[in-house]
Length: 244
Image (cartoon, rainbow, N blue to C red; front, side, top):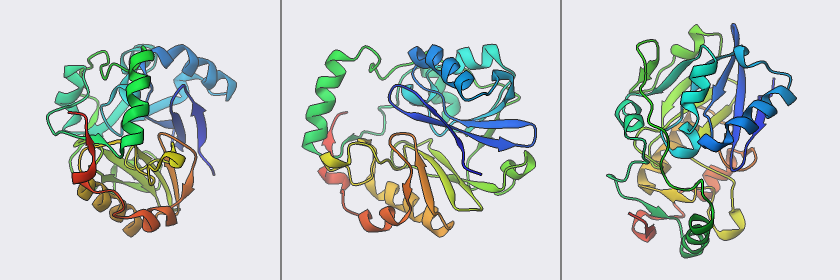
């Protein structure tokens, strides 16, 4: 069964059937919440059917409306243990450096940041709760306990708290570990901003070793895992256009 796709302003969220409803992959910007509710209704899904939220990482466009979502629905969050402190800050982590994958993206991003009020690299702080599940390594059991045949991988490279889902059928929900967004501008299936390309490519190899077939990214349309093989190593950490 293909995932249900919930399109938002700059990203796509995915609903994966689980034993008692759905697991959702990520939220969006805080301002996306009304659109999210409309898109959910359009897909014929009630909010109370969302039982789990898989947070691939803490960034503003993936964790932006956590407060609203957990206020309106009884949802258990699955996240990396490092997300626990990062979410409390309400800001995208800058302590590990990072940059845009090339000069063209740097130029385009500068224009967008100037004119897009959503792009502040901040979000409402969120405190993970005792009921939420934190992972720190590859986990082959947590998803199976809720009726999803797949595993969780740690996938740093875009940021330190990044995790992804690889289903047994080869579907991968990778958040920002990879992307098919702005390919014409030379992103090479990377997300526009990365912290460490060597880590990123090791994460790609993890997904391939887990028999990835189809990649469902946070940004862009689904694509064949073969694209990861073809573009492995094409962007170097030292060539990132430093942003912070």
